[in-house]
Length: 189
Image 1 (cartoon, rainbow, N blue to C red):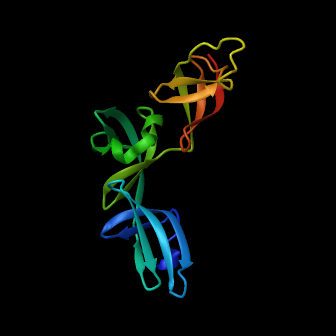
Image 2: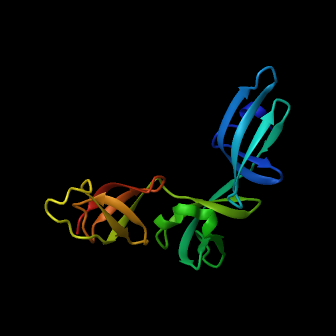
Image 3: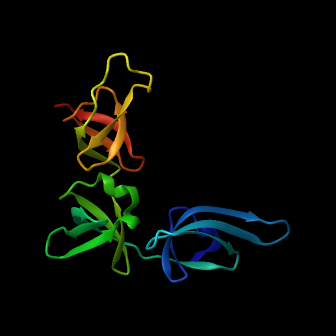
């Protein structure tokens, strides 16, 4: 059990019977009252964000989040299909609303880490940086630096990001999956 002041950012707690991630936490004292911890919590199953203040006598159970390696298969109609790493017959899906923006950087047949609570998968952890091939990049026009020397490119997963003018179709680029930003060109065609 966590005391009210131990409920801090990036902790997983059980609140109202469901798992939540603590997005923000601020312990303070209102005038002459007892201290409180004002938190912002994200429901790991529905994605809903709520605000709640924990008082000094409140406690919260730490959520048991399981992680395991799985293989991403494909995406179809807002559902992302996965299978166990060593057993393709054990398949399951995660809805797009739960994955958010992380799904747009997953290549088919890539290994990822899935997070689950009570054996129900709810999210995926990707490596911080992934390498993806550029499928569409408009040609750079000499002297066209009015836009800051960047252009929008399309990656093999369908995601679009902003990259420098020298990136061309067929190049392999490294992308930060947390921010969705271009990091560097790994190889060119």
